[in-house]
Image 1: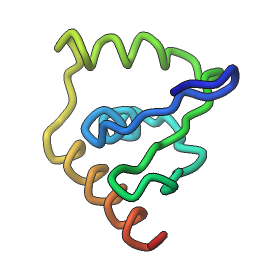
Image 2: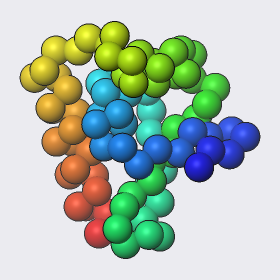
Image 3: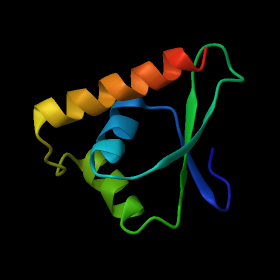
Length: 81
């Protein structure tokens, strides 16, 4: 679910890729015990294009960097528990 000022995502792979590209994650919503929703500000330049590139398979990222960002996100998730 997205609000006017934020893009809300629950796909860890997508959020990891966006984080790898330098997009800031503003908050985590843990109200649903089965998933976490990450909120990113929509006003970040190029965010919509990056999301499209992820889903259409045209995004290219160094695997080591992507997995490092995924690991950092998981650490953030567990630290917030």
